[in-house]
Amino acid sequence: MITYVVMFRKLGGRWKLRIAAAAVAAVVATLAQAAPAHADVWTNIGNGPYCFSGYMCFWSRWNFVDHPSYTKQGSIATNQNIPNFGRMCITREECGFSMQDVTSSWVNATNSTWCLYSDNWYSGLRFRVAAWEWWANIPDWFNDKLSSARWGEC
Image (cartoon, rainbow, N blue to C red; front, side, top):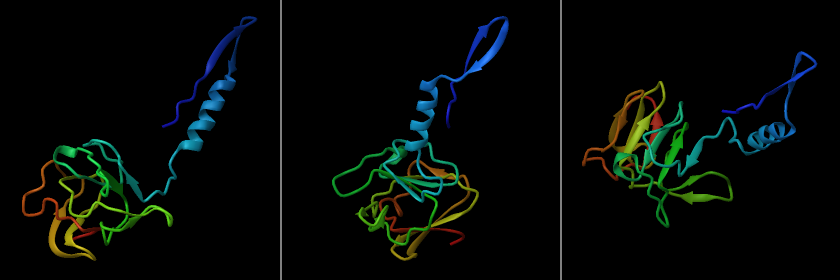
């Protein structure tokens, strides 16, 4: 969300609207740093259970704790299908970060059901996550087993 700073100054009995140059510079800087509107995957989103609307979010620890390690991400948010959590790419240059077999909590902040799988390419054990459903502690039979995920019914 962008905050516009507006200053009012009384001049000669009339109010004039003045936008400070610093405020304009701040807005431009904010826009330059904002993420693309169509970003598909965000990494290391921090501790939850907060998740971007329209995204499915995953954390590596119970209770939505972001705990990255040398080879694994601590958390991600996605609005796209992921056939292989072991090899996800943000850009062509940055490929290979992983959340394979480390996920312990998640939030579905979408209007759709997601199907989560224990094996790559949508196979193996299945876990159905309904729209707006969240799990702070994934059951043992699926904890640390997530390998792929996609929109839709299982």
